[in-house]
Amino acid sequence: MKGWPDYTRVTGLVENYDEFGQNYPVGIGDGAARLGSIRTYDMRGRVWWMDDFEAAVLKWNTAAGGVGGSQSLDTQYARNGNQSVRLTTATGVARRSEIWRAFPRPRKATIGLEVSIAAAANFGEIIIQVTMFDGTDQTNTMLQINEAAQRINYFDSAGAWVDTGFAWGAYDEDGLFQTFKIVQDYEMNEYVRVLYNYQELDMAGIPCRTVGFVSPSMMVVRINARGDNMNNIDCYVDDVILTIMEPK
Image (cartoon, rainbow, N blue to C red):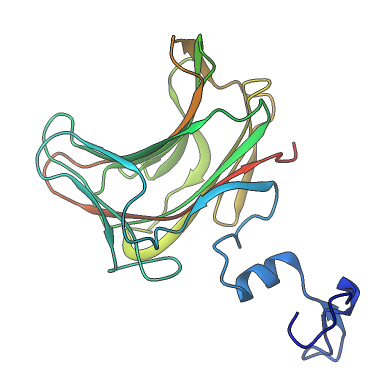
């Protein structure tokens, strides 16, 4: 810390007094926010990879179906910093607009994916997905924002969307970012928990969707916006964080 000796103990890093006259230490989340980190929502787990989308180029693969869909860095809205990714939904049967990125498969552990999303009205649905390929099987962990039903759903082991009990609510606002986090145990192929803003659902013991699929061993993260099939709607994605060693 500037102005302190190199051997300063952490216990010395305190604010002298708060507004109530009490000494208090600078916590991890407090320190992260002050230093400009995007990791301020849920401090559990160790950061494995993250993207704040502040680079000059988009470091993700893109995919689209239908007409008018696009994926690009954009300075109109951002949760932090100057820019986010704008997914413009397409019209037509496929109507998807997607970014995805592949990673070497981490060791079997408890993994978290955090994403912040802002969307205008009539966006249809947004799917947040982590797929683990182990060479012979693929395991999907997925969360769906369903605007028509105003619900947040998870993908179960039978391949169906199941209500988490979280309501999307009246959050169809371009610049209002909502934060989601999925935590999954890939050793047991089970969900651990889902977070949505201030809410948290314990999902311990709920199996993920696993099917046979021969492929290279890897992990793929996808964020997919599907429109209402009539309009090209903008959705914004920011602050993607992958964590490992999440507590159960």
